[in-house]
Length: 157
Length: 157
DNA sequence: GTGATTGTCGACTAAATCAATCGACAATGT
DNA sequence: ACATTGTCGATTGATTTAGTCGACAATCAC
Image 1: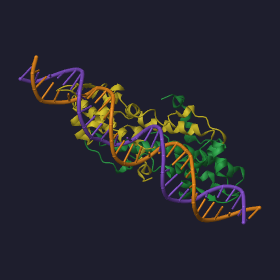
Image 2 (image 1 turned 180 degrees about the horizontal axis):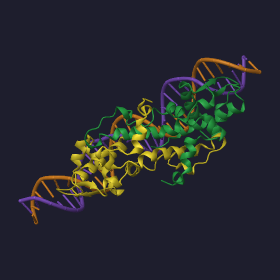
Image 3 (image 1 turned 90 degrees about the horizontal axis):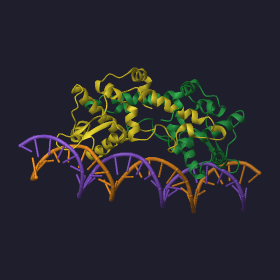
Image 4 (image 1 turned 90 degrees about the vertical axis):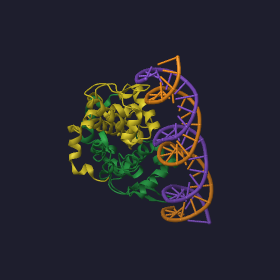
């Protein structure tokens, strides 16, 4: 249940691209890998690997050469954090690569898969409702603020 | 964002212990490691490592020797899935071992930590409300059923 | 007490994943 | 032509994952 550096880097880079898209008013200006790496303090070569995965997933578009770089393939408000995470890690909340709804357990644990499905739904209730534009604009949706509003959410556990 | 085999094993073994506790009507009868391993089809030696971690976390109690075995340290209805997961993996939803509320990002990703905190809250909204007794009895609480009720929750994503 | 049973602990291993790094190559703009 | 920038595969070292093994310690039945 941890967030890997790669997942974190992917989202941060994508958010940075979102801001560039918004600042350009929708104009399609590519951002260089070097700029992204520097802006978010991510090792450049590692980031480039990640961005290539995002390209293959259809989340970013690229251009080579001078004046080349990376940009989002769609409007930032149409890309969710879940989209980015699934692009770099696999499906959410699998057990050994198996999706929870495909698990079969015997004995007392028969109903456990339902718990894992609910867990995944809990993840999705956040990740599928936050877009890159939300984060870049600093305007988080209720799916987030409702959960962080509870003091308990900030407790160290 | 995956559930490791270890985490899954830990919960399944704990649920099996919960059922034994419930069937015994609260009487404290230890269950052998071999029985647990067989009942849930978990490699026995690996499971014993896990059960030792659960003991160190105060979730199970053990007895050696003939007539020895494992049992829950507390009533099954007082132990949540979150308790078990935190015992075998660390805190939920950290980025490289750092808890989300301690992260600081610059630039466009400034608000990202709040998203991770909300994510963790989403996990907790499920994991802290399901007890071992709930699973062993096959009576899942609303925190779970409300989320699995949605057809979308079962979709393959 | 003896012996069988069962958990404890540390060491060990193989494989996968994580977190990068590197270099040759392919596009692209000036 | 040339400098710039992304692409791709290979490689690396550390860590985690998923186990296995064996000596040892506790406990019970007899």
